[in-house]
Structures are given as C-alpha cells and as structure tokens.
Image (cartoon, rainbow over all chains, first blue to last red; front, side, top):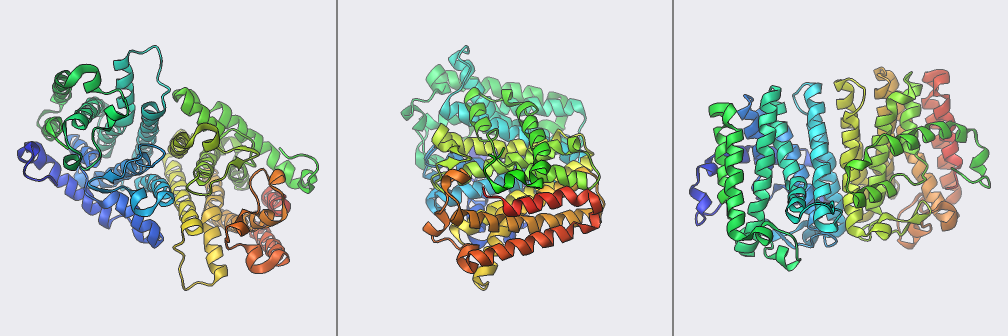
Length: 301
Length: 301
C-alpha cells in the first residue's frame, strides 16, 4: 500500500493496517453486489470505491471491534458501510462546485473520469448503499439500529464540517483556533469517532469500552486532520497523490497557519499521547489501535 | 394546497390527502431538530424541505399504515424520512450538471437560491438525516431494520432510474416501451413502492397485506409517471410550478411520445383500475388509497 521509500513503510503501524485493510478491500470487491446496477453506474461506483486508499475508517472499525473483544468478520459490513460513506464524501467534495479537485489517490477524480452528472449520482448511490449494507449484517436488530444511528449522525456531522470549511457559518464568538477545531471535529473527526463506536457496537461491547473507543476516535480524528494540514504544506502533490498547497492558496485557516509547523507538530504529539492514554483501560487488546495512532502521526501521505 | 380553479380541487382524493399532508408538514417543521445545524445549512435544508409540495410519498406511508390497521402517528417518522429522501433527490436532480432546473414548486431551486455548493451539501445532509430519522422511531429494532432496508433499496433504485433517464445504460435488447417502463419503475416507482411498504411495516402488517400494498405502490408509481409525462406536454410551466415542455425539447422518450396523448391517457386509466383492484382484499380500509389513486390520475400539476 505504501512504497518503501517513506518513513511509514517500516513502522509497526503498517503491520496493524495491512490485514484489516486487505479484508475490507476483498469485502468491497466481492461482497457488495455491484451487478445490480447499470454498467455505467457500476463502473463509476467501483471507480470511486475500489481504488487504492488508506482505508483508515474501516480499519478503525475492525480494530475497534477486536479491541472490544469481537471478531473482524463480524465488523466487515459496518466497516464497508463506513468506507462507502467516506468514498461518497470524497466524490462530492472533489466536484467543481466544491473543492474542484482533479486528482485523488493518484488518479483523476470521478467527475474528471466519468463526468459531473455521474459523479453526483454515484456519490448519492454510495451513501444509500452504505445504509443498505448495515441491514445485511449478521447482528441483532438492536445492533443494526445503533449502527444506523452512528452512521447517520457521523455523516450529518461530516457534511456540517464541510459547510463550515467551505461555506462558513461558524460561531462568531469563537477564537480562530476554536473555530478550526470545530471544522475538524465535524469534517474528519465525526466519521473517525463513528468508526470506533461502530466497531465497539459490532463487538457488543459494554458502555465503558464504547466510551473509551469513542474518546480514542475523537482524539485520533483531530490528530489526523492536523497531520493533513501539515502534509498540505510540507509534501508534494506527487507524493501525497492529491493536490497539496491548496489550503494556503485558498487562504484557509489551518493548524500550521495558526500555530506554525513546529507548533502543529507538537499538537500532533500531544494528541497522539492523549489517544494512547485513552486506550490504557483496554490493556493489551488496545495495542493495535495504539500502533495505528502512532503510525498516523508520522504518515507522510 | 391547491387553488380552486383546478379539477382536482373538488375531488374526494383531496380530502384524503389534506389530513396526512398537514400531519407531515407539522412533523417536518417541529419534530426535526434543524437547530443542530449551522444557520446557513439549516436555512438551505429547510428551504429544500419545508416549501409547499404534494407530499405524496409521506401521504402514501401514512395511508398505507392506516390501511394495514396502524395509526398515522406511528408512521410519521418513516413518512418524514421518505420525504427527506424525496427532497434530497429533487435538489440534486435540479443541479446544473443534471436537469439544470431553476424553478421548483413555483420558486427558485435551491442551487439558484443558495448556490451550487450548498445545494450539493444540503442534499447529502437530507439523505443522511432521513436514515437517522428512522432510528428515532418508537418501533421495534426489527421494524427499524426493515424500514432502513426499504429506504436504502428505494433510494438506490431511484438513483439507478435517474442514471437510466439522463445518462443511459438501459438494456439494449429491450423495446423502447420496456426501456421507458424500466426508467419509470426505478426513477419514480421505487420510492412510491417503498412508501407503501414502509407504511405497512409501521403497522406491523402481515405478509399478505405488505404484498398487496407493495403491488398498489408499484402500479401507482408507474401511473404517476405517465401522468407526469402527460402534464409535461399539456400544462404550462406557470400552472405546474416547474418547467414543462422539457421532455420533448431534450428528445426524451416519454409515454405521449411513444403512445400519443390519448394512448397515454388510456394507460393511466388502466393502471388506475389495476391499482384499485389490488386494494380489494383490504376491504373498506383500502378506500382512502383508492381515492388517492383516482385523484392522482386526474391531477393537473
């Protein structure tokens, strides 16, 4: 998934990612019935879903399920649902009317590849399919209802974050840093938090474990976005596989813009420690999530 | 809801629509927590949801629930969820990249009113909120799971229908009429069928009643679209409240185009009879749905 010339290639977090990431890739390719769709729509939906990608959200679902004592297989449909929502959001965010990006995961974005009408509709489709996927789970109806609730709330908050980020509407009484945190908490954090909570629900976890994983997800979500802000100023487009340098070009508020590069790196370190501390009550079963977190802190793409 | 100068104003079907339509309007205004959203997004989402409109889909949910022995109150969240999906689909279908419509329900479409980025995001939001609404229901988790499944399937098929209609992908071995039926079955029929099924599920109906209402919904869905095709050639934009004459201008395949106006009117009559016959096993409790169907056959907007 990563070339060997990056610092993350040798990181223990890579081992932690590889197995669940392959599980989810196989599930997306073989367990979702793309053949129910017209060929043109199926092609677009698969283009937007099956390419490479970190698969961070489904990996979090699976590792959280395992940390709470469950099995990876039980979490796969929920993990796939979350990845479908993530892919839908990338497709729509890349549209000309929004971020107007032409490159994603190292290849043309869907609207460049298949046209804007198809990109809008394929995104809509993936969001609907995500919820359908949850009803196919081998879970109790109580669990499915909780999973639907988490996914709906996470998606709603993600859209709220995108509105804050691109169209404004932030509370004016807040400081610039508070506003930035509110953007990130919604835009990225909501779905990472949902990932961890959904994993816990798949494992029928107790309330205390659910809350632990929820806190971990929130912290990792914020950390992820600070790292993203840093990559936007420190890495090339070619390396990251999507446009970089856009934040400052657009005059967007970012962590490096508010706290500087070193200040932002310190925030990453602090958040990484917070996330790992949150896992302590889980004992050894939380270790993979700890490795994943420290990997995400040093990722370069 | 209708001015008095149209033939439908005095139709008994209007009485059948008015009560559930007012129930759903009140529910959308007061029971959905729009205040959780940033002001700009809440304004856009409400603009796309709370305007006038026939509310046909939620009315079908409520009347189907009652026909199956349930209470309107029990069906309201499901009815609202279906209307949110319908409103999301109108917002996205109206976008410049898709149907490029500037008028809807007699006023500017959302992207004209609030800009294209907001229209895309508000549509996404409404779809996510629809599924969230289902988890707030006072139903068993089994019922909620079934409702989520119906809504996800109906939404998926609706998107498939929109792809067929605007981007192609129809099976080439089919006749033009079969292709047109396939478009309509998905684009309009899927959500009307889902409406009737969701109503039945809210009433904890038996399998036979569910199937009866399902057949009714499918038939009414097709009839609805034939009437829509007819209105596009026989009514003014001013009367209908959205652009008319677009189908022939775009060279779209339509019922009047394939069967002529009189031939299409005969299809409407036949489908209306089929739908009413499907209701017979329900006895008197199916009468409001019969009135609704005959009303929809004579509607002029």
